[in-house]
Every structure is written in structure tokens, then in C-alpha cells.
Amino acid sequence: MANQFSKVTTFIIGLFDEMPLVNTISLRDDDVIDVEKENIYPLVSIRAISSPAPTQNLREFSYSIEVLNQRDDSKTATTSKLLTDTNYIDNMNVCDCIANNFVMEILKTHNDFNINIIEETISEFTPIQKDERNSLDGIKFEATFLINQNAV
Image (cartoon, rainbow, N blue to C red; front, side, top):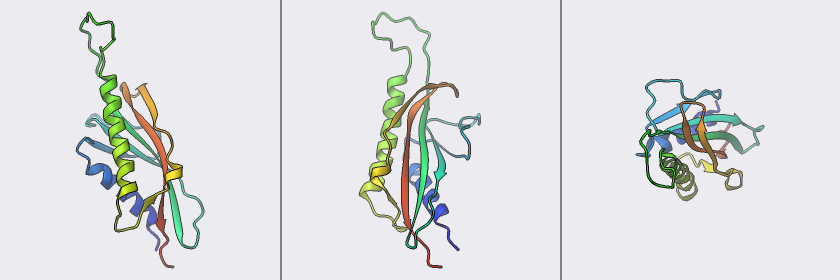
């Protein structure tokens, strides 16, 4: 029985779970990410988006990954010309760090299941700015992972 999808998904979750900056991991089949009151940020949302027809030796699985942090708005008056009444820059920095570390970890290390990321499929890191879901900032990207096919 082929279980490559489970292996790849568990592998991705495991990498994020090992990161000290990540507090919550969400695996959902829809675009609803932040509905749980117990979510602690930064939050990583993982969603499978496609799986091309298998070849004889390999399987590919594509995922959409969002790394999000909640924006804090300060109501304190400031004398600075730079509007620093939010933690937007901090949020983007943390989310970019998490996303970058995830990609670099896969590109630079070997794992027991020989799961690889197809470097050409890593999309640009797209900023998410004050998303309507609880004022979340972050980074979104997509990537395709490759794993050997099970023997049938």
C-alpha cells in the first residue's frame, strides 16, 4: 500500500515542529486558517494543493504553506516620523526566517525517506499583510516535494 502522501506531510510537519519559533501547525483542506481560540503565533498552515499522476519510480506532492503572525496595533502616540505603531516589520522578519529555514533545511540535509524539494518549484515568498483573519501578517509560498514510489 502506497503511503507517500502521509510520509511527505508528516515530514513537513516534523520540520516545522522542530523550529523553536513555530508555536502552532495547522493542516487544513480549505482556506480557513485561524478559527481556533487556542492558536498561538507564529502559526504555520499547510495545505496540499496537487499530486500529479504517479510515475513508475517517483511521486510528487505540491503544498501551499503560509507562515503567519498576529499584528499588534499600538494606540500610543509617537513623535517619530516613521509609523511604528505596529509590529509589522517584526512579523515579516519572523515569518520570513521560518519559511527560509524550512526551505534551507530540506535543500541542505538528507532524511530517512529520501524526500526532496524540487528547487525549481519553490515559489516566491509572497507577503501577506494584515490579512482579514485576525490581522495576520506573514509569508506564503508553494513547493513540490519528491519521494520514491513504493514497490507494488
